[in-house]
Length: 239
Ligand code: IPE
Ligand code: IPE
Ligand code: MG
Image (cartoon, rainbow, N blue to C red; front, side, top):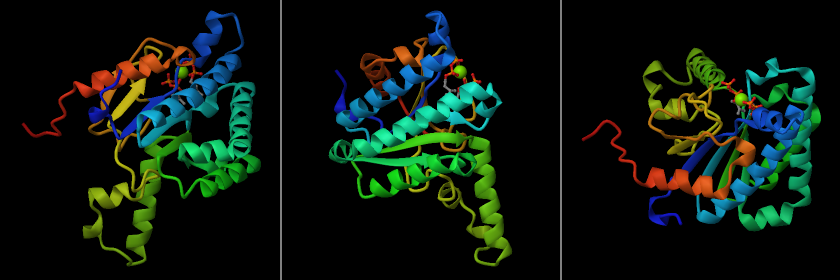
């Protein structure tokens, strides 16, 4: 049971622990990623049913390219499967009111992934029940640098002056422009770090950690995180 009056508007989830989940079962790491993708589908549906407006799933970081080529290639195939499936399930996703966004530097992705992602964003752009941000080739620092470069260009062209650079203006230059900052960030897998996730946006986020590995993460775990969140006292620096 979840207190619907105290729901976060925006939840960020670091989908971690896939490799260890597979290892525990004597399976290749990539099997963990496949199971993790199923959990992503289930938790997005559940969160949306509860009425959460924004979800950001950390799927692939700017640092994850350091992994073995074969693992990266399987993760890319999982993206492809998800994107094709989203096309097949267009009506179902429309009914759920999902709006998909890809946050991160998609220019480094394969052409077919870029194209399918652009189509999915466009096809779902009129939906608003739940925005699902998929963080792919995402890094918080790289996002901040990108925003800084864009702002520097505007200043150089004389379109804005340095006084126009406010926190709101800076936020509007990020991938998450026009979205509220994450109220709650969930990290399973027993790690207590952000790993370059939503660096700017998480300034006042509440954090919820768990030892559960992402492929084992259930709706019950999500409820636990929400219930903890409901009891947090957020002060934003005030008293
Ligand atoms: C998270 O699971 C998925 C990605 C980073 C793509 P991991 O693959 O990091 O799983 P562990 O942390 O090694 O168990
Ligand atoms: C964070 O997990 C990235 C994603 C879940 C996509 P990592 O497994 O890459 O993070 P570290 O290396 O443990 O910090
Ligand atoms: Mg990991």
